[in-house]
Structure formats: C-alpha cells, structure tokens
Image (cartoon, rainbow, N blue to C red; front, top):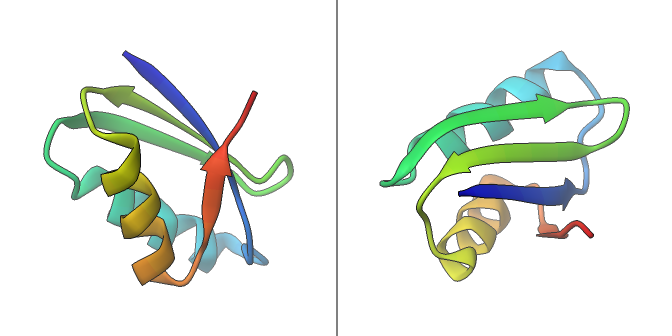
Amino acid sequence: MRHQYKIENMKCAGCVSAVKSALEGIPGIESAEVDLETALATLEGEADDAMILKTLEEAGYPGSPAE
C-alpha cells in the first residue's frame, strides 16, 4: 500500500535523512522516499496512519496525509 504525507519543518538534506530514517523504522514500512523540494514523503508498506503521524511528530517534523 502506498501512503503520501506532506511534511513540515524540512529545510535541508539532513532533515530529509532524519525523516526517511524515522519513517523506515516503523514496522510494516518497506521503503520511504522523501523529497525536500515538494515536502512530500511517499511510503510503501502496511502501517497505520496514526503511527506514521506520531513518528513524524516525535521526530520534529509534523505531517499530514497528502491528497
């Protein structure tokens, strides 16, 4: 399953790396692609939206489902 989220507070490649690492640590997530320019994270795998949003918040990069 594919999930896409708009990510706040990303300003550099280090931020992208931190977000990607946090997301890939979620059980059920197979891969995460994070784009600084569009501020979007695209995830592949099975994970609960609430867990994804909580992980982003705890990492310091609040997110919301992208449409």
